[in-house]
Amino acid sequence: MEHGTRENLRIPGTARRLKALFFDWLLISAYLIVLLIVASSIYALIPDGTPESTSYQAQLIATLASVVPVTAVFAIWEGTRPFASWGKRRVGLKVIYEGSPVRGSVIRNTAKFLPWQFGHMGTIDGVYHGFDTPFAAALLSLSIALAIVYVLMVLLRHDGRHLADLLAGSTVVVDRT
Image (cartoon, rainbow, N blue to C red; front, side, top):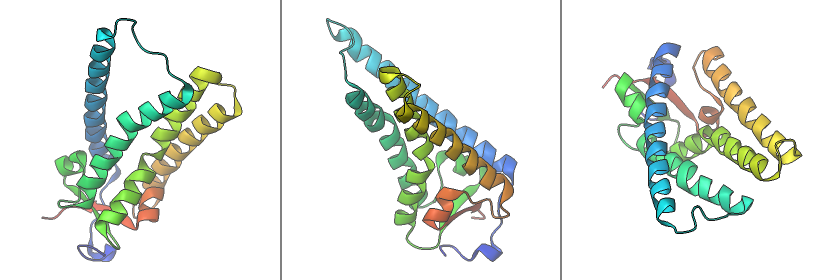
């Protein structure tokens, strides 16, 4: 276990975790607003307006412009010192790992942002093919179900770990440094 054992570390309360989540959400939202402004500005320069794209192209654009960069940034922040996202640093939290912090952080953040990716995929498929298609309905349902499971696990488990933490061998703790 990086930085000690779980037994001698303090697990943060729900309010502190939610505050960190809120700060991270603000940062991600700011990035997405900048992304929207940049994309809109580029599209405004195109003589025929926004180019047509297929469902597959839209999936690829959404994934590469939003989910991949955010996941990568959070994996870097939580996989290297001080082992905390922007929001976690603001409220005095960090992530500890049973093994390699880099490996654990990539696994943790990939799993953590999976509901967001499933939501994108379901929404884009719904826009192109209808929200009543099995693919769109399944992805949107999976997105919501996973998000609910993550929240419930943090609320109900004594160690505050959710599915992404279990997969990565990680725990969010109070940073005592």
